[in-house]
Image (cartoon, rainbow, N blue to C red; front, side, top):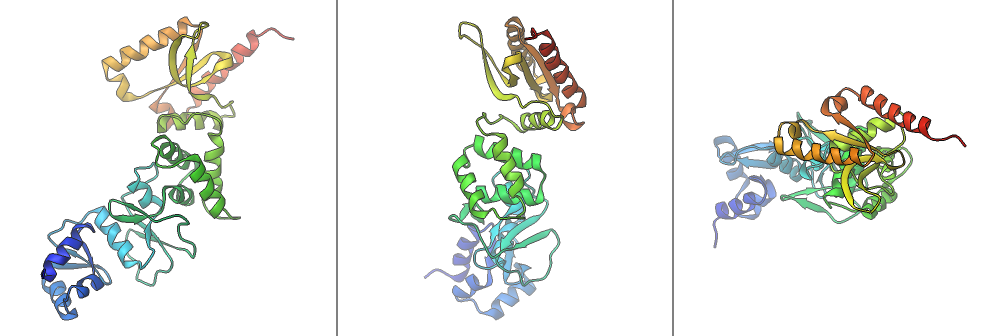
Length: 312
């Protein structure tokens, strides 16, 4: 028969080094032994009834696991913590964020607790051993703690990386939406903004589209493939106004520091210009500073095309 320590070591290995009191008691340890190990090592109390072996280094995931274990049945990593587990924009490892039915414990630094009577409607998701809200519920919850653009970026990445589908997000929205529920308006906006359009490749491209919308400019088509009159491939651009032959590109700082990428982009832009297209580029500074000059350039280009068209 295995010793209590071997059983607990195996359990801790699946829980980022975290143990719960009831798990220790089930292996045959007494409460006195548990208290002795807490007072003299090698265990450290993180929450009431939840411990970490000192040989296991503290990490953000171990603290998140501990919070989920102490929250009781059904407790899930949620909001910014869940987004971080899924590697979505808006995620944060600077805090611990969970959702549970009821929290009766003391307040802890960097711990954010959301109490709810309605948990995730779908099956529980486990990410790296940690029970978490589903991707769809996480996108909705992000709307309660992050801005509209961040929710859009998270939605775009979740769809692009196939973490979820349009139908699953829409079903979750329909299931959980109610008047005044935090996050509903932002997630619905994110879905409607992409209706019938390709999803942008990256977060900067999402921010680029948001800049244009915020300036009152028409929404361009993301990830547009430009062809010549015979149907031959010219290039794919980040966004475009096909009717006006205006291509919009985001130039990352990294691409401008890599000669091969710069040469490739220049060749593609030369092909676009030769095909009669106007190419307007945005840099990371445009995204950071609100893109006023970029949007004015786009607006001027659109107006120039409009002015050149014959009046009917």
